[in-house]
Length: 96
Image 1 (cartoon, rainbow, N blue to C red):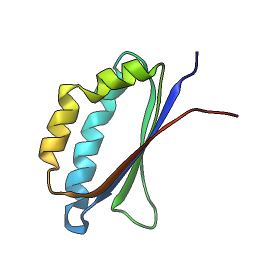
Image 2 (image 1 turned 45 degrees about the vertical axis):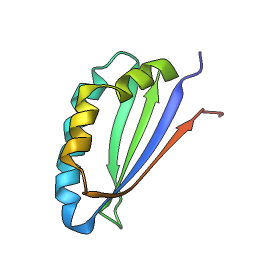
Image 3 (image 1 turned 135 degrees about the horizontal axis):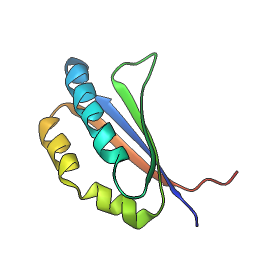
Image 4 (image 1 turned 120 degrees about the vertical axis):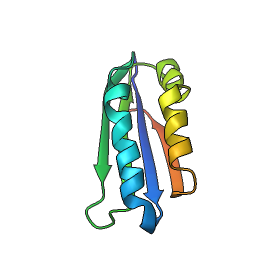
């Protein structure tokens, strides 16, 4: 079975870094407990503290899609409305 790797990049507005960071941290434990989550790791850029990256691995795309529809992500979106300057997400497959 091929796992799904997700790389999500979040760029917070300069005046909202701590808010976004706190809200992202709230997602970690609840997501790691979800069915299909292999790892869910949050990183903060050493040069640009407004840049956060989630590196995630999921057993299947379907289980990741279930995660994406969960209430805690909707709550994160509501809490950070207007605080995120940019968001990009890549669905990837490990090849080596």
